[in-house]
Image (cartoon, rainbow, N blue to C red; front, top):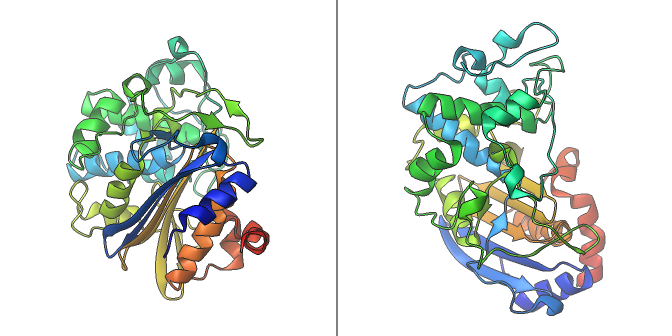
Length: 348
């Protein structure tokens, strides 16, 4: 797949997208990387620019949980309450002790709090336990029936990781995931971000907005760069995964065949191929990783604008067609492919 820098810039300028970092991976190696800004933002971004990753955080969190499973510290098929001592998950159905870790990873736990808006005052960030003790994260939907997207469930997993490891969530991930993969520009700790490379961010209207912060790190708090996310994408296609090993196959398997939900990501099948996807949206940020593990192909896309979804739709369709992967209409919404066609007509 070609990344035409000038064409990307034209779309950014036309659609009021402040900037994007894009990487194409072929045969398990980065083949192309482009960092492009609209004309008004020229020179404001580099390959070292830091982005918020939104819900791509959940894929990293799933790695952390699977790593603890691999080490024999927990069993993902066991109830999460078995391991929680400082706080317990509650259910309006009285079945909280039946909610397994695996259910939560795949959004089948019936837990509330779909997403988070973040806060602008760093002094108001809370520890995991403080947040869970104050907020009513609980089972409010019948569990294990169908997926109900839940950021709250991942905050429960954040506490689980801390209780099992005896380490703060950010510290655990940096030591056991980011460090082995040489992801030096990545962190869940907002105070550790490289402020000199942290991008400005822009909302759906194209207006510059505040960089919001998240106590719900496991759900939405990841910061990273295009280089680090490319390394992470490659390792998500490595059958000899350096961190979670054979657990990668378990992570990328659908929880139930009828829905695309896996553990921290989604799986789509078409053209006798399997595509793994992880997408994140925070206020002012958009990101997505698409993987074809068997082909060693990936598209990594980061934008410091919510309007970045428009360009992603164009590039995602081109990348899928280039790899002979044709998504069914049932799942077009995930990739916003219905919006792609008009955009393509306007940009060619």
